[in-house]
Amino acid sequence: MAAPSSAPSPGASAPESVADAPLQYSLLLQHLVGDKRQPRLLEPGVLGGIPSPAKSEEQKMIEKAMESCAFKAALACVGGFVLGGAFGVFTAGIDTNVGFDPKDPYRTPTAREVLKDMGQRGMSYAKNFAIVGAIFSCTECLVESYRGKSDWKNSVLSGCITGGAIGFRGQWTSLVGAFFVIVGSSAQGMRRHRMTIIP
Image (tube, rainbow, N blue to C red; front, side, top):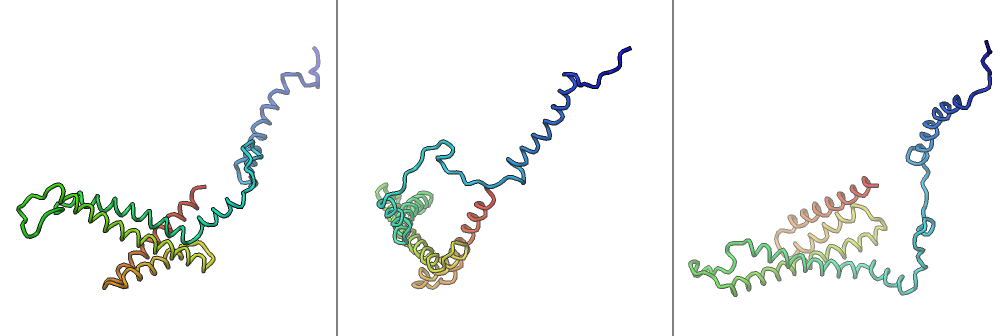
């Protein structure tokens, strides 16, 4: 009877390599997606992307102009005008009293009168939204520039200032100020919360 040889056969080494493979795979996963992963700064040119040339002076000047408070206020003013006009026309469209004359409530208004009333309401809403948007955006930019920070307090302070400025000519200063504080802080808080949760 022949004694078993101590040399491993070719079939015996295969189970050892299969047993070692999950260990190497798990180590690889730890370094790629696990807690041992190292943060890397990836440039677009490194991954084979299109390398971007250095910015010219004109591009830098345009970026600086677009980050200015005046541009942000003008953009918010135009956006508020468009949004306010659309909102005014929409609310006039669902209002049942559009075009009615209070002196003669039984008379059916003509299409011209209804469209005229919708246009007046749309223009009124558009002007109000444009003023509010411009004041809030400019105030927020100025507060952020003064404080040197970009956090939720800028929106709250801007909301207080905007509400106070709008309510200054009316009797409902505190309500408008409180409304803009709540809206500004909640919108800013939700935006920052989403930015921190989503990687």
